[in-house]
Length: 444
Image (cartoon, rainbow, N blue to C red; front, top):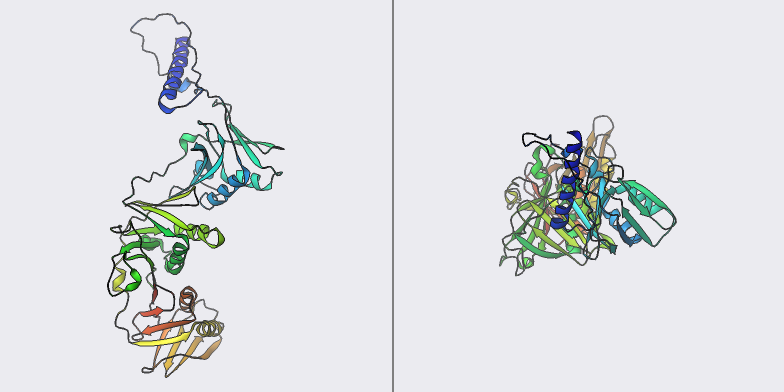
């Protein structure tokens, strides 16, 4: 009976291999040849043989790709793939044939990044390798223009792939491609493009106000939505505005970008903080692409740029608060400062305190502002700075770190605080186009 079971298992593996070739387009499938077996009584019920069946074998698949291109791809993906993971497959990068080259894919289950690399690749090439180990080898091993990758036949004792750098070869442990998670995007409800520089500028205008408080998870990202054109605001133009908003409950930033075709009717979505930081890092400086193609649906958002880089991110499943109710409209006490003078004054008076972000008091009088910080252990610091102010005298307190962050974000030579009273939110504006901030006062 055991011999019969063994033969049935070998036959089943051969049939599975042929089916795999027909369905998945896998080449070079070699089924196991069945051997003659003795007939048995019809009443015999063979035991399940799946556990004993060996895996179908495949001929080795190879890929030869540009080393600089593969290194660049892994540099990008290293921002998503963590070095240490409780789930081993998430420490790996998948390399698979795609189009006229290789697709390099990494994920942390919330963000997936795919980067195309040109090369000569077998149509059935696919494997997973440790992302950071492979990246380190490409950066530090002896110079070579190309990288050769060879996947072994899939046998129980062959789970190491060859990485050939011309003068040296490495054997790296693989994990099954079938275990690699796929972040399916689905169908986009809206598709549009945004200039890369504008996208970076927009995220830079709101990122500092993203909450890190996990209990209010719906604030742990940037709220994105489309604003219809308004006759009273010429900046929005014919297509309206692509608006970004972030708040942590103490401060709020809003940034408007000129909208483009395809944004109309876009659902309001919350892009997670990690994705925002990733895009800011990849798109800044000389590496910034001219345009970024964006697709969005109810659960995910996709960003594509540089002819082969695609980032797919899950969205935060929650309701963003009605931020319009927070933005004051009746404040009537504007105070204009030179941004550099206000920043230096805040920095100087804060030196007296050992307590991080001890409140700074702003005392307003005609065309002047006095900054004061009291510390019970060290004493008091006072700085007088100029301010264009023409209303009644009064005092208000702010978190100095928050106020400094608004000054840095405004990117403006002057900054205006439009105040109401000591207990109401203050509107902050500068010369930055389409931007405003709101800051709640603190007790003094």
